[in-house]
Image (cartoon, rainbow, N blue to C red; front, side, top):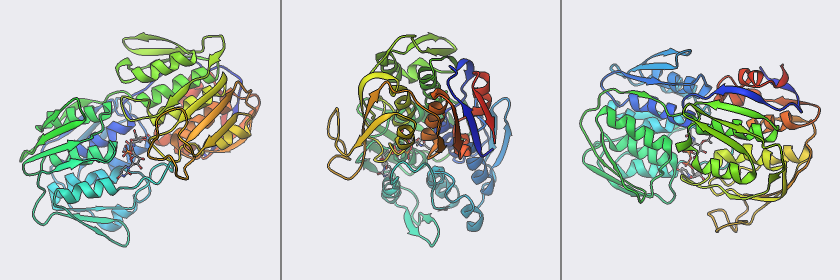
Length: 437
Ligand code: EPU
């Protein structure tokens, strides 16, 4: 499936289900590599990122059994082995997950070869924190012609790390390395996202000793051996918020089965301030357009417990339908407003700025990054030909096409499959009018 021809103007309404979080499931699968026994992960969605991690683990001798319908993945890492670099290289550019295999592979096999990374083009996305952390554990990092080779001639030793920024990936890198390193590790300025707390839960089930303080400090006491785990993945709060924004932008009414209030408190506050209505149930959240004007807001993205950067792009589409001037300051990624060009072509009034607007100075102020946006609404959206730029931006373009009058062509749809399970099936269930091409 390469493109969708979307006939906009129909409110999305009905029920869909979200399963496990993309940004947790892949990491839990990597964690299984650290164990000497089999693990079982439940609530795993059928998305491309899961295929990429399965492929990488299989190359290293892990037996991966997957039942897509029930969402159960069994991982048997008892016979891990060094993979051929050429085989690993076939995964170059497919995802950012391979960098997280470093610690587990060095613990199990003494070395790790990591291909050049992929992931969404939403900024530079360096890996300096990851490599610094590995070096602090005593690893040797060598840049090869393609990819990076990590070894640990004297083993991995517990260490003290103070992150310059609470990076999700770097915090996971530290956890996946520290749990089997020799001695104590302390991480300051750690990321505290719910997906990280779920990863800590998995590692604890495997036998790790990890404590979490309230001031972004994580302490790990290394152990010699880890076993397997059985765990049900937390729901995907990014997918849930994407459908919530879709309900708002299209004047719709969507029950998102699986959405969980505890992980979405900040999103729900913002959704309410925009004027969106929601009803919370034990097994999901119903999001709906209130039937009257939406309100403009001032919003800043941030690390947890702030407003997630991944929630920003879908919500911006809904803000084009709010009355007045909204200001959105993106402080996590320096380049996450590229997707607004297509919205402007569709009739939205959005201006992006280099300045930090609406809040405190962030890391990107006084530099050449267009990381603040002013959205003036409401503006009717009209159909257009659009190329999907990245995962969340792509979903946002789809929402815009569904809200617009007329027929849009949205190309490069496959990118959306990386993180949204059966999204065309879900669109159909919500009454969207489209054809696949
Ligand atoms: N950063 C560095 N150096 C590093 C690592 C990060 O400068 O070595 C910077 C990044 O450039 C960015 C900031 O730190 O400006 C935060 O990046 P972080 O490491 O937190 O992000 P990540 O681990 O690469 C994960 C998710 C992203 C999500 C972010 C923030 C996965 C696979 N990806 O990325 O998800 O936006 O955390 O919550 O877990 C998505 O799902 O569409 C997505 C992009």
